[in-house]
Image (tube, rainbow, N blue to C red; front, side, top):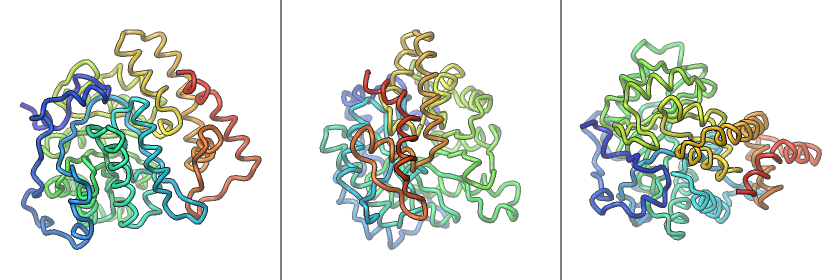
Length: 370
């Protein structure tokens, strides 16, 4: 049996179905990390008691589908807006997403303190539980420049209610890396993390480091590495990894390994080559539209899925081109909440807000029609 089989299920990509899973599949997982030089407990872990999230040990398997890296919402004074953070997570769950991710690029992770990261994840988990979405998994961005802090983030993610860690490779000292530095980094983190790891390949965020399919396939054999997110946009690489890992798909559980595209503009392409789904920022604005592509494909309605994919791709370009500032502005215009990004990111002018609204209009119209 694949080491990934217990960490992901692919019998369905719709999270509602996970509510009916057997109690054995939701059994608590061990909290102790694999023995390693990094296995000592950290002070910051104890600063957030595991009891603060009552079901912190609940095993929530990953299912193929759409995952949304959630926006971090702030008040005008840039304090966290916890009420909106919780409200937004529930809106996404009600739209049918398979899971959410905190502390990503859309979540302005680089603008947050350790305490704020933990509070956002805890708020997200609590809001989902209170709304009845106990089984919806929360992935937490845990990448850092050192192995030690990355593991610390993983421990804090667990204590705050996170289920999986999404980890970027370190890049600040890239010129000093040896050929095996990145492989050893992920292996060390996976050895010590109390939650399963997903590899995050996003060259634009890490000084151009682009993990090859050979590297990811090698790392996929680690029992605590259960998936990858490919924001590189290389569907050939995605196809190679999906085939080599026998990745889970909406119609086949495979090994349980999750081979995820990193942008909604190639959702259909990801599914056709055997991928598991998408982790996409535009899902903050149009989660139903993103989920609908997968539903149509799973039903064999490829032509309809292709038409919707074109709309989503144009909407995704609005999110990519305008960044988190444009995404928040569009959320404010069309859904009544969005707020500001933390400085030094700019506040949009009135003229820019109008332009953002125009850029997102087509996909929002589609979203509201579903």
